[in-house]
Length: 415
Ligand SMILES: C[S@@+](CC[C@H](N)C(=O)[O-])C[C@H]1O[C@@H](n2cnc3c(N)ncnc32)[C@H](O)[C@@H]1O
Image (cartoon, rainbow, N blue to C red; front, side, top):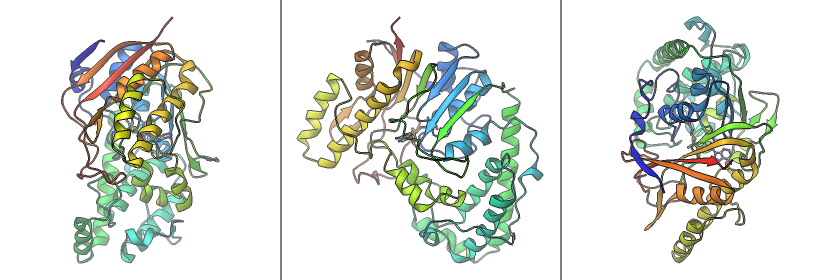
């Protein structure tokens, strides 16, 4: 088996940093580094080709596609994908004035989520709901994604959530922060912070435009509750089927003990207009918490390690293990036929107690079963991304295993 050690950050030399252009407009847990996507683009595609990312998250693939002149199809369960892709690929002139928000707007917006008062003290809530009222009612459709970025950052800061970690979490630090803010001229600080972040957005969008993005097609399919589109839809990638052929699938699926993405974005989604019920329902589809049963995956390593997991006598873990791999297999079974050349999966091996789970090997074996050929696995020996800041994974309650290496699995269609 061909395995090569590399440094993903040095994989391509035409990318200045991991946050260049619009890659760092907003936080997103376990984001791709753009070098990985660019490497796949350079090596396996030509201008005009189609890329596909079914777990698109922030939309890293959209930025790299437009800069290099490739088309792309992006899916995600998380509705915020619409907003992030539109903001990060904005290709028209943008000035600071375009991002105007009235923090004293008369017509306040109130999230349809009972828990909202748990996250903001009354004082902050009153001003934020006026600012969001302006965003919902006065900002044009085109500018909404861009103005939302600084407004979301301010909203997150002026809340009991710890803005330093992606997970929505009321920490001691955040409670202290709120207490201190309330004893200062926080109202002025709030608006100033908005404009500082807005300036950053304008600069980053200009930087992106400096890379001369091409007028390619970017097809986004994410869940929506008639907020960004006219649709009420849950996009669960394991149930979706591609309606066109693509040249290359490049994705970084959720990790086996992944963060709960939708829950991490609950505050953002609520202010953007999603109801608490809709958001809770989305969470139920999240891999690996979606309780998919067995019957879809074909891999020897999967079977061997399943026995190891069974020995642990931990029902919850076994369920996660089964659901995770069968979800990914089900997605591949439904969609691999429409991928013409290459499948690139970016994953890290994780550990369940003492068993190390080589996700890439299991996916490789399943794809071989579907008729694909292993080309290479690139292994990064440096741990560059951290999924969690805390020691235990809040979703599983188990000790968190830092991902020791990251793997890019490359499979080719057999012709
Ligand atoms: C590791 S992140 C992807 C990050 C992305 N590569 C980037 O650069 O931002 C995995 C993504 O899978 C999504 N996801 C989890 N379960 C899903 C499902 N059933 N259908 C679609 N997307 C799902 C999560 O919302 C999350 O955005």
